Structures are given as structure tokens and as C-alpha cells.
Length: 380
Image 1 (tube, rainbow, N blue to C red):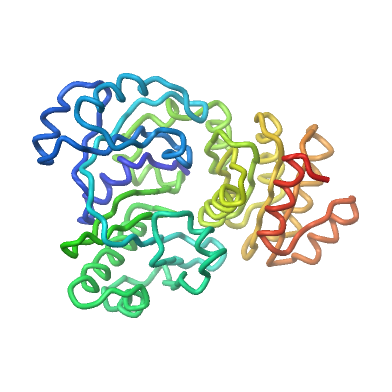
Image 2: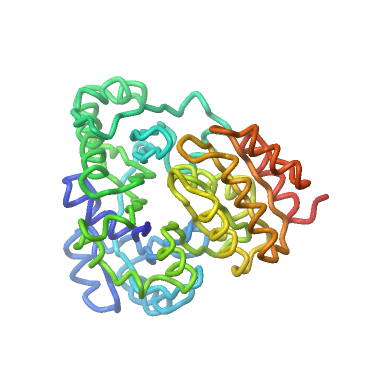
């Protein structure tokens, strides 16, 4: 299940008529002046395309002049980030901001529905919003077989504070996001932030898009964005062959989760609590012991300081997850601490299997996340 570069996600946004800033991809530092003329400004955003989180903190996103953009592109291309060299830099039109929002459409494997998450507090990690402003996160489920229409999202838009013209723009964008997920076999479509400009336009300032890797035969043009084998590390390619969605990152804690949305939330909560994910790993719905074992085997070969297993199970059974963990621990040498959170189908049986083998399981995500960070960062 490849995660797309921001620029690839925005190309899909344009295809689906979701408003974006003007942007252009660069693999060298030529023709920057022409882009400045196109956007009518010598100031622009320079964004190195990488699949790691926190690009701003890593210096991968900067506001630059055209002269600075040339220097930045020359300095960043080929530099290693998250185990992969930067091959593309996106230059983008800067936006004036009145307000920022968060929007996401994700496939919830356990319910078989699309889960829509929205907040009037965008531009920050959604887990940070959930921690500090839980009443400002709104959720809506939509069956995958239902065709989306704008009226379905009016109440959600009103909760976010949209009205009149902006409400119409919001509901249109929501409809297009869901259709994009359906038609393009996407397990996650996230915009953070969605920008409201002073002239009341709504624009997608960022994109995070994950495509179901099993849909390559239907989505040939997306696969053609870039050779997936070339983008994959060896571990990523091996995981892909096993039907596991795995993206190697540059953090300290390896994660295993079920569903793209929960995997993203797991990455976010680690970042929010002061650590960082070493990977994105989604075993998908209905994962069996074999997939859990393979996931742990892959993580055992990655340079990490701890492992966080996080499941909210529906189709997947917690006892299968637990047994897979036990099986793997007997075969592969796992030298780092591991913390497990299990909730859902057969969770009592799964927890009992773990406890019988001297392993404690948590029922809530945040305490479990805090525990693995404590163990990794030197706590007792």
C-alpha cells in the first residue's frame, strides 16, 4: 500500500478538481524564474518530497525567494532522509491564511465504511487536537457502497463553522474526497491543513494519500508516478510481496497496526508525545498470525529502539494478533522492548494469551504509547 508523495497526492486533487495552490515538480534547479512569473511572486514554498513525517522540523519545507529556491534545490536533492534520497522538490505558490482546518477520509477496515474526520483546528497533528481539544474533532461514517452527495456533509460543515458560500465549497470538497477514495482505491485521503483564505476560498495546502497496493492493476497511472520497486527499500519490497503495507521512516519506535487510519494515528501520537515512528505498517483487516509474524520479523531487521503493536480489531481477531506475536518471539530475536494495545474482537482471549507468556497488554492507546516511549527513552 504505497504512500504517495505530497505532489502526487496534489496531482490527484487536481484531477478531482479539489483546489490546490499552483505547484511544479523540480529534479534540478532550472526554470525557477518562470515559475515565479507564473505565480506572480518571487516568494514561494519549497518542499522536498519525502515520505517521512515532520518535514518542516527536518528542514525539508521552507519559504524562499527564487534565488534561495535554486540554492535549496541544489543542496537538498540527493540528500538522504528516512533511508531514501530526495529526488523531487516541489515549488508551490504561498497562501494567505485566515483559518486552517483538518480533513481526512479513511477506509475503516473493521467497519467496512469510510470514516471522515474533521476539525476546525488544522495545521497541527490531529492527535494533539484530540488531546487538548477533543470536542473540536468531528467524525462521520459513510458506507463504501453509498454514492456521496454534497448534502451529506452540510451538518459536518456547519459544525466546523462554515456558512453560506464557504459551506458549499466545503461540501463539494468533501464529496470529491470521498469519490477520489472510492474511484482510486485509496485507504487514506488527508488534507492538513485545508486553508480558508481572506477572500473566502478553500484550498488544500497539503496532501497525504495512501493507495491500496492490491489495486495496482486498476490504477496503472498512479503506479506510473514512480517505479515502486525503485522507491522501496529492500524491507519495503519484501513487505509488499507479503501483502503488508510498510513504509520505512527515520524514527525510533517500530509500529504494527491494523488499518491505514489507525497506523497514521499511531505515528501521530508517538510524535505528539515526544518520540517518532520508525515505520508505517498496516497489516490490513482480517490479518492472521502469519502476517503478524512476518511484520515482527521485518521490524526485527530494522534499526529501532522499541515496538508498539496497536490494534482496534473488528475483522481481525486479537487472539490471532497475540498468537502471532508469541510465535514470532520464539523464532526471531527481538532485542527491543515491545508494548501491545489490543481492543476489539476476542480481545480478552488475546490478552490472556499474552499474559500467559508474561506480556502485559493495554486497552487504551495513549497509556500504551507513553509506556513504549518511557521504555525506549530510558524509563523503568
